Length: 293
Ligand SMILES: C[S@@+](CC[C@H](N)C(=O)[O-])C[C@H]1O[C@@H](n2cnc3c(N)ncnc32)[C@H](O)[C@@H]1O
Image (cartoon, rainbow, N blue to C red; front, side):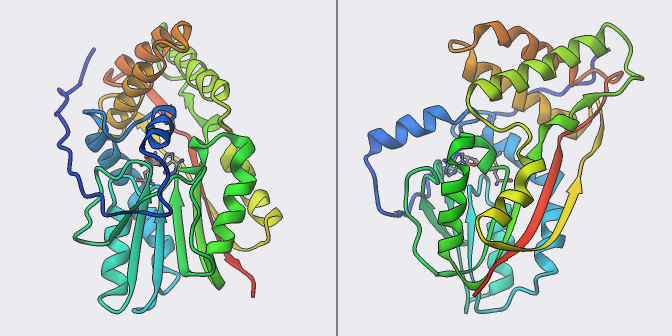
């Protein structure tokens, strides 16, 4: 039984305004190639809008609790399609400033906030500059062995007493509901295993969300609060549509490097439009913390 809709072609905006401590374009291309869900892919805009639809209300509630001031200088790392950067710029008003960074800035809107093309793995950030930094589902795309140095660099760029809201996922809660009929259930479970294997082979930490609080503490952040959220999703829903697009993009990215995993991931993508499918998503772990003085 299928309940899918057809894909829209994503539009692409070119709003590159600034690259912090510019590296070579060749180096940038190589980095973009390494990211499995390139923002320039035709489906990227719709996929990232789907992610925002899923996550923004919780992120905005956490940010709103920080009572962002009108003169705050805010940094949105790996900003994707930019909804949180846009929200932040409304909060700080004309007296404040928001910078949105990404390795791939095509979907960001430089008329609403400052845009920097920036690779968290290699590029520097200005020291002790920001009142607030936010990132969501970005660190997980960087090899696990680089997480400590990346968090050190994020800590350095916060002002003393500045706030970080870090949101990353734990993929191990992603599970097909036992109520899903066979052979759909086993096929999807195998597909999820294939995704976790592909991520692990890329050096990604599929359990990053579980470790996030401890990692931040180890790098010297003072933890204020930790929240977790996940969703129960039905095939054919808008949420499942986001997962379908993600799986299609992933399958395309690993087709030549991990061909043995592609069929399982494509099968999972197809199943996302099947109304009989039920699953629990990954868990997003959201940590609010401060740089001590
Ligand atoms: C899953 S998307 C999340 C987008 C956005 N943070 C959100 O939650 O809506 C991951 C984003 O991180 C960006 N990204 C991946 N690797 C990066 C890196 N090394 N440096 C900076 N941004 C990166 C991608 O281009 C993409 O926009």
